[in-house]
Length: 467
Ligand SMILES: C[S@@+](CC[C@H](N)C(=O)[O-])C[C@H]1O[C@@H](n2cnc3c(N)ncnc32)[C@H](O)[C@@H]1O
Image 1 (spheres, rainbow, N blue to C red):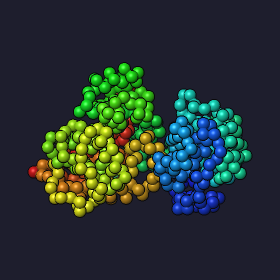
Image 2 (cartoon, protein in one colour):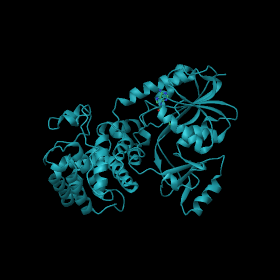
Image 3 (cartoon, protein in one colour):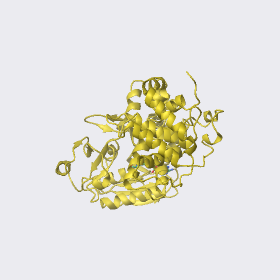
Image 4 (cartoon, rainbow, N blue to C red):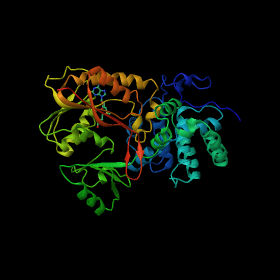
C-alpha cells in the first residue's frame, strides 16, 4: 500500500513534515480568502459546502467553530437555510475529521492545500454519515463538491483532484474504510493524545466516553420553577405536538432539537436551554432566601439563572470576559431576574468588598473535554499541555475564592472536564491546602446518552468551611 502524507491535523511539531507547505503549521496562519464571493447560488449544496469548508479550514488554524462560522456568515449573503446547512456540514465534519483525514491521506496524491483538504473532509463527512439516512445522495455530494471547488480561487486548481478522490472513494469505499479504520485516529475521531488520556483516566469506560462524544447532542430544557411546573410544561409541549421526556427534576429532553424561537414559552422565560448534568449545580449549592452568593465564572449564566429560580438570593455574577458576561445580563432579563454583574478576574480579590459569601459557585475554565458532543471542534483545538495550564489557573481561582467564603459556607467546584488533573486531583489537592471539609457531591459524571438520562461529562465537588 502506498503511504501518503497526512494532512495538517497534527500537532505543530508533527505538522513540519517535509511535504506540507509552511502554512499547514498552526503558527503560520494560511491566508484563506474567506471574504471571496463565489457566485454560487445560496440555496445550492455547493454554496454550503464551500462555506462549511472555509469554517473548517479556520478551525485548523486555531479558531473555534462558532467563531469561524460567524466569520463566514459575516459576508451577509447566506440565507438562514444556507447557514443551517453550513453549520450542519461543518459540525458533521468535526465529528468525523479523523476518519476523513485518514481517507484523504490514503487517496490524495499529495497533501492538499488547507481549503481543499477542508472541502474534501466536508464532502467525505456527508458521504460517510453515520445516520441511517444520509442527508444527500452521494453522487450529488461529489458533483456539488467539484462545483464548489471550481468556484473558489483557493480550490479551483485542485478541482480535478477533488473529483478523482471522491469518485475513487465511491468505487473503493469498503476497502478504503477498512484500511482507514485500522488507525485509531480514524476509528475514534479524536487526536491520539486524547484517546490515550481517555484510556488512562477511564480504563473501563473510555470507549463509551469517546463514542458518546461523537453523538449529536440532545436539546435539554430547564423548567423555570418560578413560572411553571414540570407537569404543566410537559402538557404545553404535548399540545404543541413536541415529543419530550423528563430526565431530571427540572430537565426535559426534546425528542427532536429545534431552534429556541420554536420552543414554547422560551421568550417568556418559562424554560431555558441547559444540559441535565449542568442542572445539578444550583440544587447542590443549597442556596436559601437572603443568602449572599457568588457565581465566580458565570457566563453565559445558565447556573446563575437556575440559582435565582430556586431562591431569593443576592447573587453576584462575575466573569473575566465582558462580552460573555453581557449574555448573563440577556438571560437574566429574559427570565425577569436580577443579579449584580462584575467583569473581573476570579484569581484576584481586587474587586471584592470584603463581605463574605454564604455560597460560592466555581464553574472554572477547563479543557471542556466533557462537552465535545456539543463542541466537536474542541478535540482538534486543544493541545495535551492545555490540561495542566488550565488546572493551574483553576487552582489559583479556587484558592482565591476560598478566602471570600463565610465560615460554615459552601463552595461548589464544577468542571466540564473528563481529565482527573482538572477535576478529582484538583479537588483533593484543594481540600488539603485549605483544610476544606468535603461534602457529598456526584464527583465525576461521565457523558451519557440513554433512555432515562442524557447528560454531558461534568465534575462536582462540594466543600464547606469550618464554622
Ligand atoms: C465553564 S464556563 C462557565 C459556564 C457558566 N457557569 C454557566 O453555567 O453558564 C467558564 C467561564 O469562566 C470564565 N473565566 C475564565 N477565566 C476566568 C477568570 N480568571 N476569572 C473569571 N472568569 C473566568 C470564562 O469567560 C467562562 O465564561
